[in-house]
Amino acid sequence: MNYQKELDKLIGRLGKEERVPSLLLHSCCAPCSSYVLEYLSNYFKITVFYYNPNIYPESEYTKRILEQQTLLSQMKTCHPVTFMAGNYDSDRFYEMAKGLEHVAEGGERCSKCYELRLREAAEVARKCGFDYFATTLSISPLKNAVKLNEIGMRLAKEYGVDYLLSDFKKKNGYKRSIELSKKYGLYRQDYCGCEFSVPEK
Image (cartoon, rainbow, N blue to C red; front, side):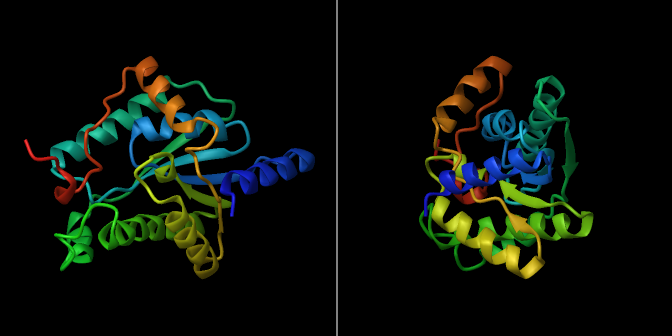
C-alpha cells in the first residue's frame, strides 16, 4: 500500500467536503513533528500528544518535551495547534521491554514500543472524541512505516477511531524536517530515545 497516496486521497475528500477534522498527533520529538505539523495543519485541527515513556534518562525526556512546546509556541500554522502531555510512565516501557533488552534496534522491542505509544494515543483519541489519530514516527528513515501503519489500523478497529495512514518520509518530508529544525534552532538528538538505543561513547 502506498500510504502517501492514501493520505492524499483522504485530504482530497476533506477538501471537497469543506471539513476540517480533529487529529490527535502522537509526536516523538520536535524535529520530527516540524514537517508533519507544517503539512497537516492545512487540513486538520491538531492536538500534539507527547507520550514517550521510552525516553531515557528523565533529563532527556524533559529536554525533548520542552523543545516540543517551544516549537509549538514559535511555529505558525494554518489551523491552531494545541498540546497535550501524556504521563512519563517509564516503568510501563521497561515492563514491555523485559526480555528484549538485547534485541537489535528496529526489531521486536521497537515494534512493541510503537504499539505502546500508539495504543495510548488511540485511547486518548477515543476518550476525547478526536476524528483521527496518527504518529510522527514514520518520518524517520529508521522507522518502519509498514509496521507503524499495521499497528495503527489494528488499533483503529479496536478503539473505533480512524487512524491516519502515513509515511511522512515521502514528499521529502525528512529533508524538510531537517530544514525546519535549522530554522527554529531545534535540538536534534543522536539516538531514538530508550536506554537501549543510547550510542556508546
